[in-house]
Length: 365
Image (tube, rainbow, N blue to C red; front, side):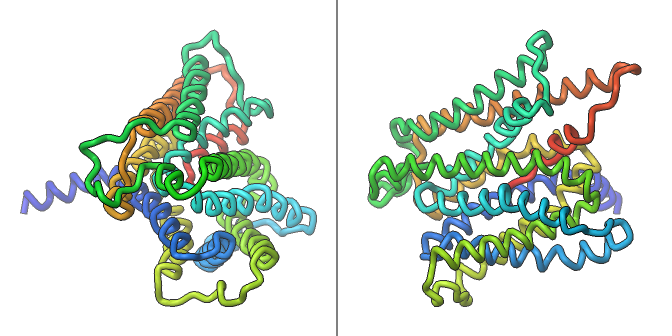
């Protein structure tokens, strides 16, 4: 009995760690299932429509019942602002992300998501939401981390390098990590185009993260705000998909990988994972959540090696290491900056926009 009680206590104290590990598996599955569905012929724009539809339906009852007393009334001007934010952020980001999967791999997609904190930091500095001070150790760490992260992304995009021989499990029909499988069957410019689209998707997502601060000030019901943006994104993506694809049969969903993928991304990723992240943030804080982000890259690379028979390459691995190292540099700098700000009794509290960016930087595609 004491043994079971000890195990229960141990699991109880490690709940946040287990939750974050589960979340990284979920995010790895997002890239893998999405890649599988698009490779099987599903139109990327239509994929976004169905994903956002599932997400809206899942979040709607929670948003209605949990925040029915908290949510302020919606004016027409506020709805227009939410519509534009969803268009510039969610719709643009997701459509670019899934279109880029045509030219890249699931592993590369997950690898480039590690650039989101760095891109968000750069945008926040340009908008004067974040500040840079190289006089302090944490300021230098943020700058060097951002540069390292962006450099790693460029290496992953532009340099493949020799293959890792001991990881070549399928020598006769192997595919290469990141972009090599694309290069084998299409011109190099196709790969570059896909890479730039993926980075543009991350930039659009970073812009959306920054805009969430002002939006939450105007409409503090976060769950309803997320639900409304998902619904608007679904409508916008449906218009885009209808304009680009006139074939009605491409909208059909059967009991296959297409239905599984959109349901997984909409219900599991947007619905369940959202709540797990919020719970972990309350327990451990946003920096703790962000530290687990690179695990999704490792998990995706391992599963891709078996599912897609991809072979790792030294150049791609080196770029991924720089990505992760730069991410940790930025996070460490932010953590130290926050500690310094909260240590002084006379220091003013940071504005809510900064806090929202810190929190939202850990969210995924």
